Image (cartoon, rainbow, N blue to C red):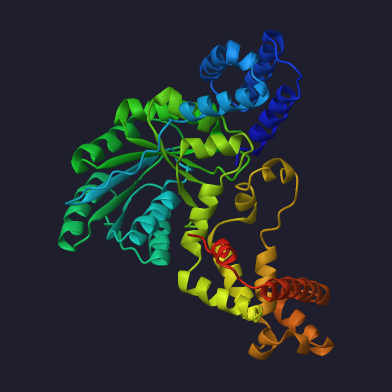
Length: 441
């Protein structure tokens, strides 16, 4: 996420921290370099200018120049200003305490509205909301079918009608939700390839008909300044409540994320960084600021782990570790839990200090899939007692998993080393501190 911007900022700040003594000149030179980095990342010119001015006022203060650790103080100033630029505070989705909550999703075609609608539906359903997805995009070919397919995957009903009348779809969906005891409506509206008056009139009419609790503007982070321009045009016409940034896992330079909040004046509420339906995060300005500065985001990583690892399974795992009986079945359960957390590259990017190191590294997200295939090709006895895996068994497992014998041998060697490490750990005993480190709460 925003790796290019993060790497360049980290390089510039490293130069500042390397200065034996800071002066007004080398601070100004560094801030000029940071301004160039921001503009290269497609940050709005006015936003970049104002940001540097605010940092400059604080960085040139006598307490910074006289400080024993001026480089660290400047990094802290930039972190604080980035947090403010991104919105300052966390803004949660508004939910009606009583009555129906309706969420209207708007944006340009190709921004990821339909997928986001399903992701949000899944998230709200997991929070015990009774959700209805509404197919109000009656123009794009297969849009309704796409939403129905996504609805099936998460077991959420999808409302649609035969007529190509988005206004009628929206108004009838409210009655349908009331009649079927559903308390949350998510309207997936139509997008266009560009902002046009006909589309704007339609979304404005739907908003007046439904009077949504929240209207969310979905924007593709990879479109740079065009994203900011379309966000402003939509807000002028629809006056939405919050912004959703999609495709942050792509080759985004980061300009939209840093500019849009300042230009439009509306909070970013969600960020989406993948196609999987669990790859949706609430937006915390201070966490993204930390990631941009290469400091990682341990809090989000722990929250993902808490959602993915079952508490009962963790307790069973602790018991097996105590007895040194960790086997391939246990390993398989851990792999499945990790896969729920998202891509390996996005998880590694949350670990402080790893962002720059993995920038050009090839993170193979299919590695876990191959490991899973190899374990699934083993018999139950082979999983529990890997030492019986002789040459012929390994050949059979390689054929069954579509991998090579080398892949199977590599996994067995790594697993053997893991078991040895856990064996040493269990012999030393599990104290209370060690147990707490295994848990995610």
